[in-house]
Image (cartoon, rainbow, N blue to C red):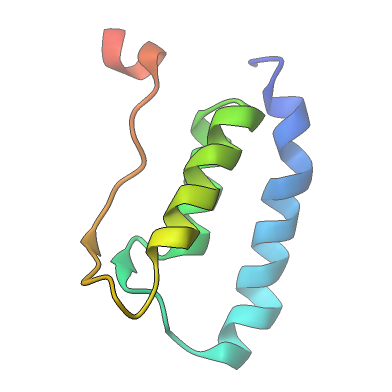
Length: 83
């Protein structure tokens, strides 16, 4: 297990709580696939805390009424790329 995954457990838990309890109340509003919360969850599962946080913030900032959205996957990690 990668040591940085320990630091990612809190944001992962917060995202899962959001997906389970808050997101159903708000309804679908994300312009991207996967949704912003799914993107963030995957980012924290694949990358270290700092990089995943940057990816998540950048994604949420881009998800606005002026964006056409579309397919926007989480970048693969270097380890996944090399294997």
